[in-house]
Image (cartoon, rainbow, N blue to C red; front, side, top):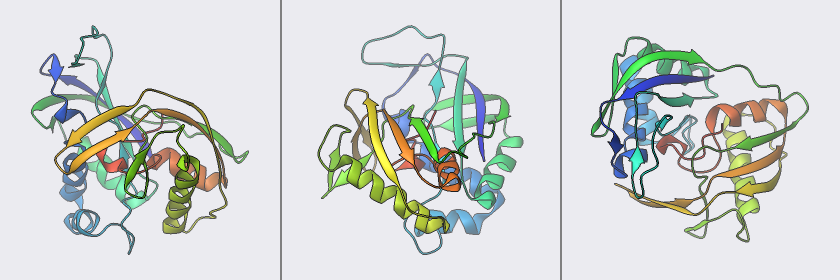
Length: 229
């Protein structure tokens, strides 16, 4: 399940540390309002014996802003998207948001204007082109890779297969990088992240493509990375 939360920011600029930094705490906080045990499991250990957390979120994305060099502009017309391929987790997120009038996103207050369920994507053909709205993170030997780097497709394929195994889905996958954006670096409380937005063709079982659409691509999806448009 995926859904979009329409929000309005109380400030014209979001500090760079608050673009991705608060995402993890916001997600765990929402899940914890409905199921504290589940939130603790996800935070402390991951999902069912795996360190992966099957949920994803976008950073706040705003329209109607003026470009400002070195600044992340905000407005009264924003959206945060989130979801999970695990119905128990998605239901907790949605139920918690239903009673929210605002979301504290780090130092920024976001007024909740409404919630929209996403439409169901058609992956019956076994192929999807996923375009990320936030940088896609992939690592090899503790180094972040960009889409044009050697090993990128190999490591992204490995990550997708790991997600399939966690969800009990077929793990036959083919990955092709179609396009990518510029290198971006973000400094978070638990260290820096380096990646780039990308357009990725994935061939896999339809249920796995559905799961990726609801979860995101690559690493650190709970921090707002790799969210699919």
